[in-house]
Picture 1 (cartoon, rainbow, N blue to C red):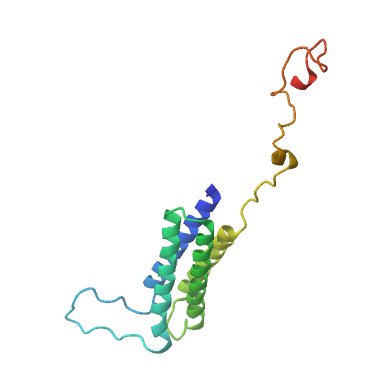
Picture 2: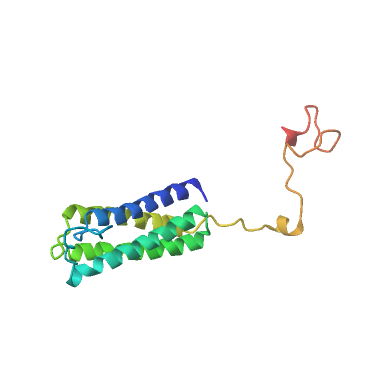
Length: 172
């Protein structure tokens, strides 16, 4: 993997992690209680807003898959497929936040941050899924096994047709 791809992959993974953390931090839903509390549990979200945790968890799982492939230095095709899946899931989260910001009480900063991170993910997807350098097309010389053309590094000095008083002009 080339350096720019690794840097772009790191940025997208960070963006994916930030999206899930931003969604968690600015979610209109309270976090799940860790232990029993003397206070009654907060009311669970109902209606359309109840779909957000499912979308968020789906996007987070796909971001973790991208991260796992990146840590293994996996195949470019696998990475591209995983990033496309993550981008689609992240797009659903962004659309949900935009469409339901009033109904679910989503702060405008969360929507703006999600859009910015999604734009970074799309750039990363375009980088990862871009076609890599094309392999060199074999020439006729490669096919028949002919030696390379003579240059100054592979010519022999001595008496020959091209030798002059100052030496072989190909060797200069």
